[in-house]
Image (cartoon, rainbow, N blue to C red; front, side, top):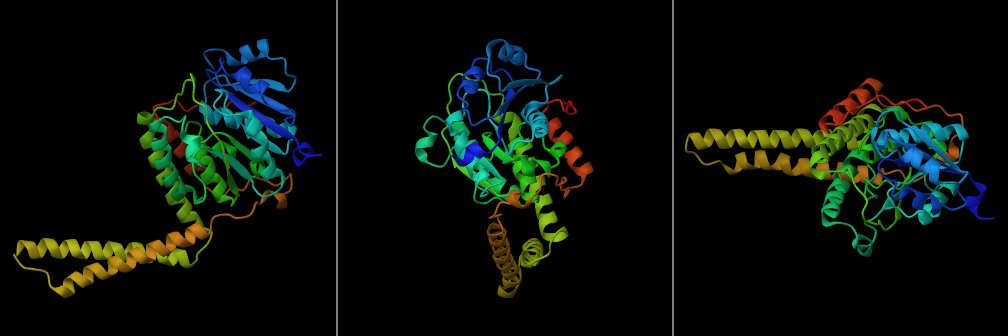
Length: 357
């Protein structure tokens, strides 16, 4: 018996304008999956009715949101529902046909074996994987991948917006799902939330398929919200990990580096302005007083980054958790709620409260 056959696996599929592809996705999901939850996110094409009318798979259950919650809201609805059936692993697959269900085993097995808490797809693993990806997506994902490393602390992963994921149910139970972002920032915000509980994340190589599917992800509309969201998460992660929950050598290095760089830059600019106005040339001593703090500050800053890279979670935590472990509340709820509403407003998309199952 394979290791995956000893576990209960659930799949959630957020459905919004996917009637051309979703039946094919469901039909390719193998027998290792016990339940399939399709979430009709107030789809104008009535995806839920379409699935119920044309799909005879007994594993399929359709959930309906009364109003559109966005991809993140639909996934959270699926997580909340699947937790009631108590599987071991939950896989999220999009219904537009870009993700191959045949890869599902590769996402689930590392979690069952206890070497990962969360697995996600990586379309950048090999240059050959990028042949079908549009150039604008390659550039956008590469840029977001770098800033995601800063905001999440997962320096060894790439392709943060990849929506092909699997997660241990034990990890889901200790996460505050209501704080996750409800729109397109969901996958990136998920990584940040996972980092606060020190969960182990593993990339799974995959190839994405691009055909006639429609994408609601418009770069010009989500670029600034994504950047601002990552910057907020980065500041919170550093504050919580290095000054509230812990204080270590990196805490000192980071604080000292910022002070030295600020002093050197401010002193240098001030002297340059005053001496230029008087027609004088800066002395070697003045230059050194400005340059030396900046040089030392940059070295300390790089040392702090090196410490952060070495602190990336290396071991899965879910094997040591019980099924009744309560949610770990590391972040202020009022801050999280305000952030979700703010980011949704920046995207110019409605933010609705989650529909309870």
